[in-house]
Length: 325
Length: 304
Image 1 (cartoon, one colour):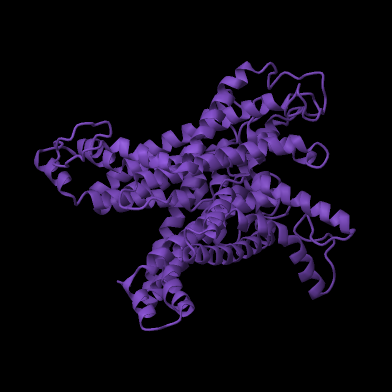
Image 2: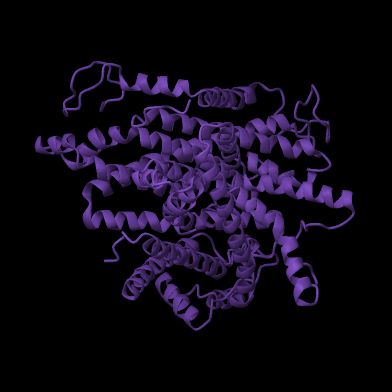
């Protein structure tokens, strides 16, 4: 098992490297980082432009720039920024804020997917099943930003009607943050409720459809029929036999959707004006801050690849039939 | 079976015997039995007509403002007007037109490219297959919105911007089609008619285009339909964050973005463009569901 894990880990490294190289070339070709500076009126002197180009490593060929950037990260240097920010210092707290949202949303979406999927499978072709199917399709067709603004507006209405702030509608935490451990936790929770709901509601529908169809398939299998035949309770068979089997492929489905969830988080954070990875990405792309964009893409792709690896390993642990060879 | 338009009941050259009813008629019949999907198809066709024909007939233009500022919906302006005086119906119709154009373009490009990619990978197998699918997987580890924002940052403002946005989105969605088609081809290539075609001396490309892809058509059509819905949502999201369609042109996502602050004061500005996105995406998703049932001849009972 240890050897298998190590081998799989080694396999992911070239994927991340190739991915980072392609995106590096793509981002470098997407625009001139000094475009804004060059367009300035009155014009900036050539000496300053040359110095900036040198600072941004634009005087190096792309291959050399990539190598410089990659080796720099190993020593904690994320590269120069057009806006002269420290990319490393800026991105880590933001990553924490966004990962917090994505993790909570995945948990909520999984809960919804399991409950709705199992209920639809057990009561299939009933009114409940059709209702859940329709709601699933509706949420699948719902633009996250529109849903987020709707929910935000409803929350503002409720807050105004009750004269209190039940849930916060702007930001990821209060500024300045409250003092003490529990007030901070409550503050963060109050801010994260609405974005989590938006992200979970707009992502769970394909998962619940998946749970439903695999539950239906499993229920018709011989060993589930045997378990029922030998007199086990319906609920026991459902949870212990059927759901366990249906859960295994779900891990892969969820891991594959992780990149999509980060896309959703960017949109959701924009609506709720978070200082997370979303606004970092959008301002960096606008400013053509290539190393900042690269830091974003590298971190998120490493997270996605890592969790796909974890899902594969979980798959092997949950389903012993998968050969580790 | 191989040729979708085939109507006679003779065995085709590859040894597959056609059933008495031509396949396309079976598929259409099964699709029409799916009432929700049929209704959705009608809604979608009406929306397309409304956007492309209605937009041209409507007496206000999306980029010419009227003297009426911030009018709520009325007979004169069914969807109301915004603060500058633009007629929202004209803008929504124009946005619907743009969004549908982009989505259909994305689906066509990623459908064709993904199908060929998946078919080549699946048919060749071995190292070629591994390499090709690794490349496809590589695209999927990056959040689409980030890559699309980077790529579309410069192109959105140009005249042909919508085509380039379509290309960007197609570049990010083709791996889904490629994976599906490859999986199907892996099982198809073991079948006798492929082996028969090989013994007749058919080359790889002939086998792919004449034998593999026609048999994968059902799966491809369903996948492409779903991609239309995905592309509508992706394009509107991209326009919402400011990297998609730019003014003076307009798109449904851009309209929601421009009007998001008006949600409590002039709600019609916010609700109409959003509702159009939902209705378009929902109808396409239902059409996809109906097509999936219609093409699925392994399932004896249809859902209704």
